[in-house]
Image (cartoon, rainbow, N blue to C red):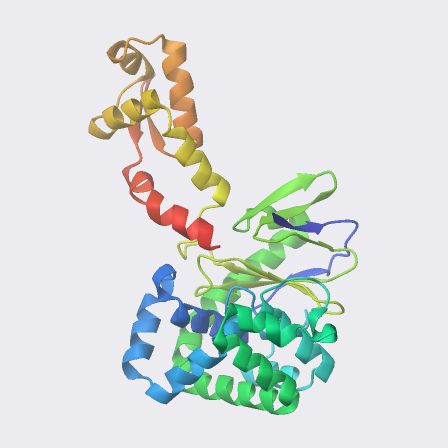
Length: 353
């Protein structure tokens, strides 16, 4: 399954990068709900759990479905221009037409990323469907349908209170790093065009049609010549990459910043596992863990031809499990211990994305 961004002929300003305090706050809140797979957020989560009022933590748990795996669209930038502060982003949510707020909330509660509002809202199956997911989501859905305006006011009040209690200093520290990354992204897109998006986590470039494909748990397509695209760097979103799209609003991609321990793609994790499934490559890995060796030395030790040893090494190198060191005319190979050590964590992070 994949989310595809088809290039078409986008204008030079159709793709932009900008920071978003609201998006980062919601990434933090998601990490608070699921701390076990957000190592970059561990310090923030521990501090919040130790210092925050218990009642506020309970309220965070109540609203959690809105920023879980399928985040509500209004919790990411609603516009592609400007650099609004958190208060301005909350005002933007308050100004959404009620039918859009209702549909975006329903999408998050059901757990869907369709470009269209959920049909269940119109067919009376919304609450029964939520009751099959969890009592918590059913209760939120009931509150949403009973009084959309009050639901929105309560949510905005919580976000404002949470930001003041636990996010202000975090955002002040993060903002310069995220702004630098956003400027770099914007420059790269202006210089290289939309193909510059291919180095985002979980992304790869396609050529028929030209575009970018993100490895996700659902299928969707958006055209960048019809819909603006906003890139939002984040620390606390790691290891996820969040992509949201909704009619009449920009496509938003919130991605972990470089150096924040971004998870490898699922393909990378799959290649590493496949490379070690072969018994001979596992033997080579054990030998290279103990000492660097040349292709010829490995071939002699395991009674292979040099081309056979070379093919096995190539698979290990392509999977990122072996490092090469040249000394004069000789190239010695060594197992990348850290890459192997992280395989379990990397696989989990790739699956969580």
